[in-house]
Amino acid sequence: MRYLVIGCGYIGERVADLLHEAGHDVAGVTHSPESAQRLAAAKPYPVHAFDVSQAAEVQALSEKFGGSPAWVIHCASSSRGGAETYRQVHLAGCNNLRASFPAAKILFTSSTSVYPQTDGSVVTEESDATPDRETSQILRATEELVLAGGGSVARLAGIYGPSRSFVLKSYLEGTATIEGNDGNGRYLNQIHREDAARALVHLTTTAPLGIYNVTDDTPVTQRECYTALSWRFEKLMPPVTEPNTQRKRAWTHKRVSNAKLRSTGFTLSYPSYEEAIAQDPDLVRSIMVQLGGNGAAPSAADASRGCNVILVGLMGSGKSTVGRMVAQSLGFGFADTDHLITDVAGQTIPEIFAAEGEEGFRVRETAALRSLIGRDGLVIATGGGIVTRPENLPLLKQLGFVVWLSADPNVLHRRTAHSHDRPLLKNPDPAGTLRKLHDGRSPLYEQASDMKINTDDFSPQDVAYGVAETARVHFSKASPAPRTHPHS
Ligand SMILES: Nc1ncnc2c1ncn2[C@@H]1O[C@H](COP(=O)(O)OP(=O)(O)O)[C@@H](O)[C@H]1O
Ligand SMILES: O=C(O)C1=C[C@@H](OP(=O)(O)O)[C@@H](O)[C@H](O)C1
Ligand SMILES: [Mg+2]
Image (cartoon, rainbow, N blue to C red; front, side, top):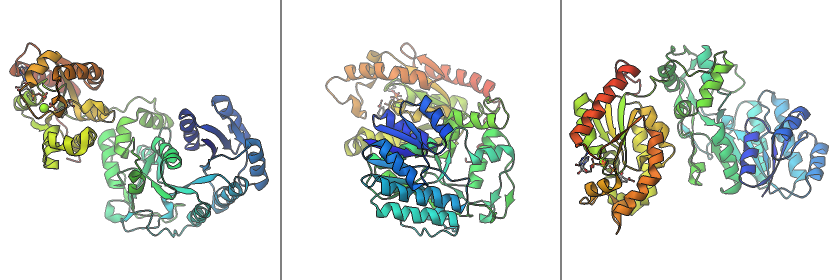
């Protein structure tokens, strides 16, 4: 499809990149000739300099572009300007685009600032969107204009990502405050740049036209957010203040729902801010550099890995059996993701596979793993397929010390031959299946783990002894005593 991306800033540039990577015919437009020149030199697609607020310039752009794009994505930002800039860039901009590209659909990137709620309620696209601030009112008017022309609207929450995170930066600088809501602060609704850009692409390719909130799965109060940050960075909590009514963005307190976006099949790479802080290495590093640090990981980064032992490996490698023994030896609790899943589902693993397929089981498995984040002092046996979902790998590392129990596929076959609770082995050639899984998953276990123990020639007791001793050494080096996590 042909695309025109208006505004190649923090979001627009990434949107244009993603569209180009997906094989679409894309051209970018940016206001300043210098940016256009710099981007055009760096990008594999053209970038032109035009001012969308000027009708004649947009007309010239349409002549230069030649023919109609299927979509015009308006991502031009006016965040540093006042109402007049908003009127020019958004309202006049979309008007001009409609006039000069009558056959194209417009996707307008608006903002969750159009929701004025202050009661902490959940807001959906159906909720009241009559904001007090003039800038947000202009966004609403632009939304109406675009929707009337058969376009779509993306209401973006607070955008963060590499080199940009107001929340993290103000926290590390010591200028953050916890505003209102009885000392808990307002809800923060945020979206990582990567997810925002992916969502915009999704809205032009997969989703029906309409209004969509683009925010992550996890609105958190300022107190919850800063508690997690202070645990990670070992800095004090920000002070509690009254809401600042002088800010350009009105003080609001609401949980913006992304259910509609997700109902169209969209999934987030960073479902929560806390996960992004843990998993996007560029995010923390770039903000630390901006604040004058050297970008090295913060001193507490290693300690931010939990004090748990996690066992990974193929079916029959002994994770469940050995895990219990290790827990007993270390005086730790024991958790088995398979059991967490069956407890929640009220069904056996074969029943879940039959009802929801392997994919349904994997979704539950990630949820089970996530539910353990923040816990300490556990030995966690996982299911053999836990490494197959990329998002699980950082969660495993975050939980603690990951040990890979390996074994020859023939040994695994012997150990699993008499059990009936592993749907993946219920076929005429379980030995062949185990060989294939061994070849396919070994690189993933390697990547996910801190150490590997081959169990072929050892009893479960011997393996447990090895794991427990290694874990003792690991924890004595990493952190002298299990931490207490504020969430636990
Ligand atoms: N090192 C080992 N030596 C011999 N048998 C083992 C060993 N580890 C596990 N087993 C046996 O293999 C079977 C599968 O073990 P299990 O702990 O359920 O593996 P997993 O949870 O990794 O799939 C069990 O019957 C267990 O007693
Ligand atoms: O390897 C796999 O994909 C699976 C392993 C099983 O756990 P164990 O490894 O404990 O058998 C269980 O999670 C499910 O049957 C799928
Ligand atoms: Mg098991």
